[in-house]
Structure formats: structure tokens, C-alpha cells
Length: 255
Ligand code: G
Ligand code: G
Ligand code: MN
Ligand code: NA
Image 1: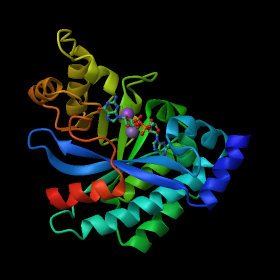
Image 2: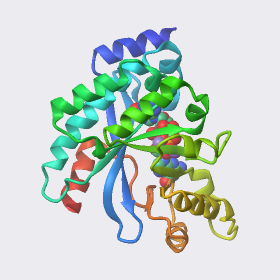
Image 3: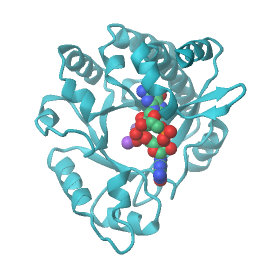
């Protein structure tokens, strides 16, 4: 309860910040976009990571206004980045929980933010988990279809870790599977256990989806993923989640 009121106050005081982790094309290591990751710049405790507050934000419903703030902040940032020559195609991925998608105002607010910032839906990618899709409610289905109409991309985050039901891959408009980092890390030296990674890549391509490998930390993992035709990736090998200034450097250097 204390955390909940702290979060409410933090939202009012604008204490949240976004960090951005580069997503690259594996073959060229060219920057294609970022994943936005929220942090809480706490006045006494310093930088607080989302694992400690997202669940409380979700249970209390605060995730909805917090998510609106994220969407707004991302779109304002993207507009600035897209003004850098050659960076018009940059996309930003945003993490969403079911409660946000089910919120009746979500799409209306998105429309308002897109109109305000002059961005097209195509430059946003929304990351949702398998468990959110498995809720399979009408409101989630409706939201996803409305998002698709606006050109937004939909990714399944942490793919392979949830209670998978492959049937939803056909039911919903999904562009990308993000291979969970636990599978990428199993490909490390000596073990050579990449059967799950191979299977996810094949599944995605068969369904005409893209694949992003998460948590790439070694050149060995990178080389193997390239050999398996995985097109996109992110991980400490390329960059950690960066503060806005460091992300600016990436955009200016890459574009
Ligand atoms: O950045 P870090 O590895 O600490 O992120 C931990 C988790 O927090 C990730 O699973 C990520 O999906 C989640 N997360 C990060 N930012 C956001 C956000 O803006 N909204 C939601 N709903 N989840 C987020
Ligand atoms: O659940 P989600 O995929 O949204 O979480 C992303 C989280 O993964 C972020 O908290 C980010 O800090 C973390 N992350 C990103 N790259 C790496 C990596 O190469 N190794 C590890 N261990 N974590 C990573
Ligand atoms: Mn994610
Ligand atoms: Na993930």
C-alpha cells in the first residue's frame, strides 16, 4: 500500500524516466529501433527497476496512467529522433500488460498522442506476453485489431516461456516473436543446445513473422543466430538499456 501511494506520487512528480535498448539488424549491426524500458528515478533510493513496481502498478490500476505517460514520452522522443537525417524508419517497442490493452480508452489515447506528435502508427511496436494473449478476451482482441488498422506492430515478448498455445498465433495480428533470453543464453559455449531457438525461428518464418533474439551477450551467440537466419537482436553485446543522452548518441552515430 505504501508502494502504491509512492507510485501515485511519483507519477504526479514526473519521477519516471525511460531507458532505451538498441535493437539491431544482426548481419549489419545497423540500428533499427529501441525497446523502451521504464525506470523510477527515486529521490532517495536512486534508480528503481520495473521488476519492483510493475506488478503493484498493475494490481492497483496505476499501470494505465503510467502507460499513457510512457506512450507520450516515447512518441515525443521518436519525433525528435526521426528528425535526424536517415532515421525516419526507427521504431520503438513498448511493453504492455493486459490491463492496458483492456482499458477502454487505450486506443483513443493512442490516437490523440499520434495526432499530437504527427507520428504514424508504423513506428510503434507493442510487446505483449503470451499470457496476455491467452486471456483471449473480446476487449483485447478488439484493441489488437484496432492497433493493426493504425499500422502498429505487435510483438510477443519472452516467447517460449509462457503457457504457449500456438492457436493464438493465427487468431491475432502478430508481426514479431521475441525469443526469450533464457533460450539465447542456453546457446552458450559448450552446451550447443539451440534446438528451441531454431524451432522458434522456423515457426516465426513459416508464419511470415520476424524474430528478435533477446539477451545476446557473446559473439558466439550472435554468429549462431545469424547462421540460423535470425534477423534482429538486442543484448549487452550491442548495448545495455541506455539513458536518453546515450541513446541520442546511438541515433546520431547510426543515422
Ligand atoms: O528493464 P528491465 O529488464 O529491468 O525490465 C524488467 C521488466 O519490466 C521487463 O519484463 C519489461 O517488460 C517490464 N517493463 C519495462 N518497462 C515497462 C513499461 O513501460 N511498461 C510495462 N508494462 N512493463 C515494462
Ligand atoms: O521482459 P523483457 O524482455 O521486456 O525484459 C527486458 C529486460 O532484459 C530488460 O530489463 C533488460 O535490462 C534485460 N536485458 C536486455 N539485454 C540483456 C542481456 O543481454 N542480458 C541480460 N541478462 N539481460 C538483458
Ligand atoms: Mn520486452
Ligand atoms: Na522479453
